[in-house]
Image (cartoon, one colour):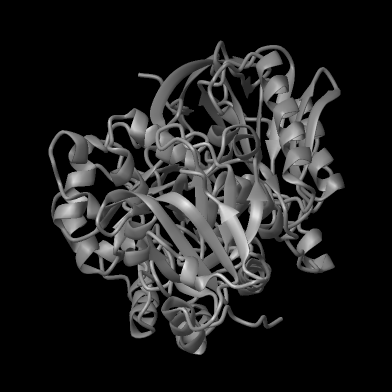
Length: 600
């Protein structure tokens, strides 16, 4: 499906020039506001903006020469005129929404440009899935740029995905109109060790003149990090402390600092700017992962900017980090990211530069949201049945599928246990002594079972292990077909029968998230598209997601955004310990390890 691209600057230059010179009327004039100029880092009062053909033609103290009888006048009334906000790194699928419904959710929050990496759907549906996301993205009234996923699987040899992305896939995608670059290069050991496949993907991107996204999830800032940077990734969002941020910027990377639903990595890194005084133009704000509840209740990039300001960042600097810095990084400084002539007319009106209430949103020269309500349509792609029927278990699961057999004669065992860390992507590699009953290893106290259920090829495979940190109690289980990045099915529970119920329920509905207790389903979020997304409105999905949160709490879990922790337990590129369809993976060494160890 092809879509007409937004008219280029050269296409409309004669009209822009005519309006700016006063020889032709503008389509719209925003009158008498405070111009937030992110190029000069100034707030300039008593300015107006003239817009034509979806682009800015003129910005100055007086735009009366651009006004004709049919020009739409928008009165700023002394409010701040801010460039539309850009999310530099994100996964639409994490919102549990399709691109159309994600756009509908974030437009009222002032987000007018997104740089999305659909590697979640790539793991399930391959290049076809990426194309579907790309095509729906191009249908939207705001700018959604797609990064071609780089790592499916994220760690070859340690997981099995529904599809694999090849260097040939990357080269093909680079010819598509909405592809802006290569998605996060998560296989950082592959780059550091000059893996030919990873370097071929990077080379295809660089030959196309596009940006290579980074993902260096290691605290090691020595030669391996230097080798990774030398391989070509241009940014990184996996930093968690000031030293990470400084190291990336010093090596010529952009430091992307994220505030998502569960990632709180801005406060610990922005001190590189606010206290150390580094040049802020190399720092960028992003969300990475935001679920629908955050979008509906708390906001999107406006939330990130407010948070950065709350962490001591100058408001104008924080806005640069969410506008012009992002645009410049992706080679789009002449298209988006500022309120200056020729750029797409993406403008926010706000009465407060610190709290950032989003009172009016203009995208591509038309009003798209006002006072929190969207005013335009966000068209849907016609998702085919192949995208809607993706949960294939092979057979109905029973509690026997979740049994962990102990060594013969043992009454206690030592197990390697995944330890959940609140508000962070990394886990801890823990060890626990666990009891044995009737020849089976049982969870104890805060240690419960986790299973990775294969769902792409109907193999019937189930990998069992243990996880701690959720605080669950009673007879319960939670299952999700959102299981970064391979997106099989993760089931966590205190009772094997409940685990089987939850897994079979998701096969029945075509994917999503469910939680069972004592044989009763407490909550269900249906995600029929690839087992990852819903094409229902964000408010509906958010309400079901909130019911899920409440059900998790009723089962004893008090962690902030614990669902995000659950969904990442199979992400075999972030330390320390993860589960995959091939076994338990120690990400510190990128080796599979045994679940059980002999007691000393």
